[in-house]
Amino acid sequence: MIGAGVAGLAAARRLRTYGAHVIVIESGSVIGGRVCTLIEQGCQIELGAEFLSSFYTRTLALIDELGIRRDLHRIPSSSAILRDGRFYSLWPNVRIAFTQLVGSRHKLALSYLLASLLRHSPLLDLAAFQKASPIDDASVSDYARAHLSEDLLEYVLQPPLAGIFYWTPERTSRALLMLVLRAGLSHPTGLKLFTMRQGLGQLPHAMAVSLDVRLGTRACAVDRLPTGGYAVRLAGGGQPLVADSVICATTASVVPSLMPWLGAARLALFHGVRYSATALLSTGTRERLPCDYYGLLFPRRETAFLSSATIQAVKSISAVPCGRDTLALHMSGPAMNALRQCDDETLTRLMIAELRRLAPHYDPTPQAIFQRLFRCPEALPEFDVGHFRRLQSFASSDMEPPGLAFAGDYLGGPFVEGAILSGEAAAARVLRGRVSAP
Ligand SMILES: Cc1cc2nc3c(=O)[nH]c(=O)nc-3n(C[C@H](O)[C@H](O)[C@H](O)COP(=O)(O)OP(=O)(O)OC[C@H]3O[C@@H](n4cnc5c(N)ncnc54)[C@H](O)[C@@H]3O)c2cc1C
Image (cartoon, rainbow, N blue to C red; front, side, top):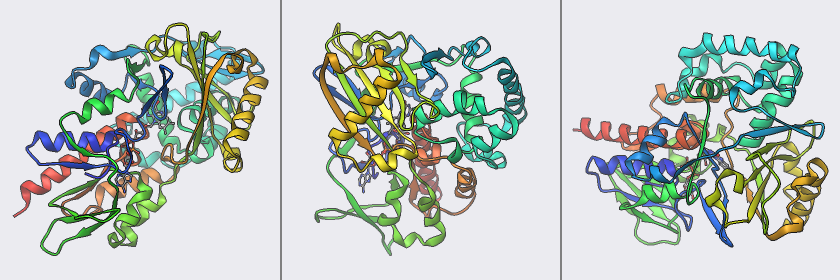
């Protein structure tokens, strides 16, 4: 197994259940990949995933299997979107009917979206994204401009895309929008968000218990052996690891350098996946921040580069020591490309100045006990127009030679649930191959 993110760990656990001897190699120094909780002065900093959703059926079942359900905390409050200096809450779902974030005319246009969701319902399956390829025909922005309204695009659709996925509506397929909306809206008790008592990093750590995970071990090439099976060469030399099967659970961008022999047609899928980027500024404060919302979303109409802020004490009381707080500020979007060149100090100054301009009450700096900036150049795979068709061809053609499988959120869906489902599906494909092998 290459990669100890949640996709790789889910695959390894599944293989081990069937008696396979599994070694997981991980280039990083910690388990979890993009699910990683850092503790700074007692405060949790989520470097990657921040929350789980009530529609993560497989993840929640896994949490039960791991015996850590008691550590699952419901995030009690909602998120809010900024417009002209005021925050408007959109959740629970029913509030959309009463919000003054957009006018009645625009709310009426939402009925078109709901009708579309109903019509396409059979195509919207979180466990098989490729089924939505027939509606992978327009970006969210083109779709919204044609059938909804500019206000809905800029104040209802764009802020969560930028604040949660670090995407733009121009580079997001409407198929993805439909999938996520359906999953969120169809839950009988409404959309709920969860975290874990020790931060989401608790999940991959629990998944890795009793697995043979070798940290600081980077695969630099995977060779196909003439006798069958594979040899995984490791950076820094040493004996290659020989295995009858390999699951590659890295980001898509790593695959071509590991296996150039896959050939141009297969590699096109991996080359085609692009990732959004973000930078996270985490500020610990000695007092609670004056905020009732867990998440603040900043539309691009209001700011060129900030996309969201989360307030840890509102999210979960166990995320910070008593009386303290942490504000996590994210940036994303086209302006990031220019700003990424800035040094940490300049970027920090710019982000805080922009927060002060947008929402001065939430400026954490007067109370700051620490401030740390993290850059994430590969945050989430973009599910842009064309990606669902790539997934369709992945599912229907011989993308994977015998004994080799791929896993990751770029295949299963851009969140923890998608990564876990993709890992388990990859393990099932490898096991099927083993059973039918002569
Ligand atoms: C800032 C941010 C916020 C997010 N928020 C949420 C959220 O709130 N909710 C949600 O559900 N999801 C969220 N996500 C998405 C979620 O974290 C990912 O979808 C998921 O963790 C991806 O898991 P993965 O196993 O596919 O990939 P990864 O976690 O990237 O795992 C791949 C692993 O492979 C390792 N690797 C790479 N190359 C090699 C090599 N050559 N040899 C050995 N190992 C290698 C990497 O170090 C990494 O550990 C967020 C992501 C980010 C970045």
